[in-house]
Length: 77
Image (cartoon, rainbow, N blue to C red):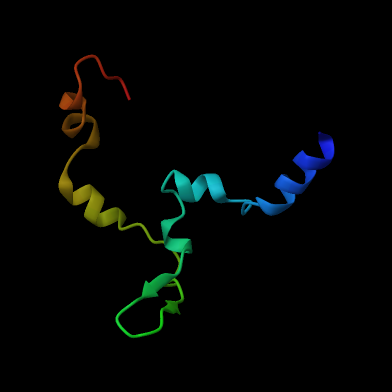
């Protein structure tokens, strides 16, 4: 019985990040499939630059403590 399970596990090897893909956390890591022609082509995922934070833009929206306190009654986040 252990031998049969070993063979099945050899056939079903998942990516190390499979759970992230299933939960929708790694969608940007997957290639796009171009199926417009007779043969399917893989288009590499888009690579984004370094993440930035527009602090001035965030401040321009208003006081975060006042804006988001009404999000949920009793919320102290």
